[in-house]
Length: 544
Image (cartoon, rainbow, N blue to C red):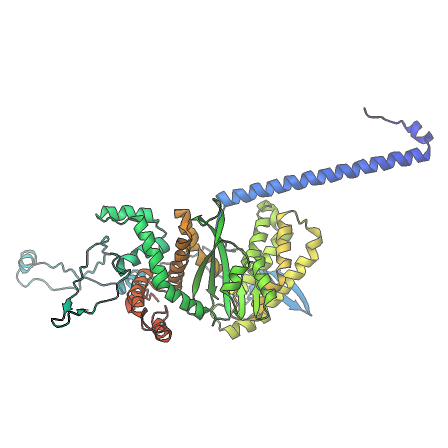
């Protein structure tokens, strides 16, 4: 029951009682305000989660930053200021456009001929006979014009045959010693798998993400009894006995690059001695994407702890670009020779998520909007430096991009007190400010990429394949997958055709089994994906 006082009662009431009533009322109001704030935060959080879920289900997946109102920055009297794109790119002497329609993208002329140029060509002639010509035009009543040439792609499905090797065996009549004629070192001794069959399976599973059970059904249609167990065993043994030789050599080469990138993704391994659904991880390391001769290396591990990159990068000296996972920062603290670079894409995603919580018509001018505009400006200027040398890129970064980065962090620090850490925008602010040291690393070296996108692209083939086969059965299978994925991704990064490269490696590596380490490494140099001694058919056609 609510008690109400009249004005007369309040005028005659003792002052101490009034103070007590006022204090109680004030306390109740504060309590109600706190309850309202908590409810508001809960509601806001639920709305953010709903909007984020809707974005994941129905929103665009592209991360392109197309915005005509991007912000540009300049330094005036020592202060960083920003202004509109129109002022930044204006040219008062430029001619006015005659046609305001958006130009359509023209199809590159001669592209089809360029695509076909490197393919083997079979000519088929279609000419009229002399009798047909006389019937049509009369005797000597025609002249030959240039041929009309029509090109068609020809495709033949897989052909399967058996190669039967007969090896001569000879025995002496005197002492009965036996000699066999020289022959290649077979893959897996008595196994029927050949270099071409193994390469086809590797290309299908590790490049095109086709599960083994689908390949098993396809082989059945050709009358072959090749089970998924056969194929799994072959992949494990071929990777352990042969491809691991090149994998280890690439790992050794990896240390000569002073900028690398790293990422990791979870997977399930069915039989790894742990409870069902325990997460394992596939780690990926690659050389900085601004380098030529890229190397991509996968590594399977049962956990995500620091010991794995510590061992894989043991004694590495240089810069490693990552997504902000604290394990790498811990490694940086352990070694004076290792520097961890940050990823601006991961920073941008958080601000983009926060911006998407705001209705489109209300975004402009908000803190999230202004932060995103500044990140867009940084990326726009970085995009102009792709073709420069490392030294030139560093000069431009220091002159143009560093002031933009400085302005961005000044902006964050000016507004950080206004932002609740419980919302998406607060999380974005927290990530950026915690990662500031690492996000600035790319400004110190022209070979350091601005983000870790190249690692994410390198691991994408694995994540796509994972959707098809869900889990790997054994630890050996996971390790062999890491080796084969490494060779496939390195081949793709160096513009090689993975099938042809696998077939070549499985032909040549068995020849190295009896050689010394030094002799084997000399031969492995010839098998590296950038070696000039690789057969020409392994390289993708040059369409430049």
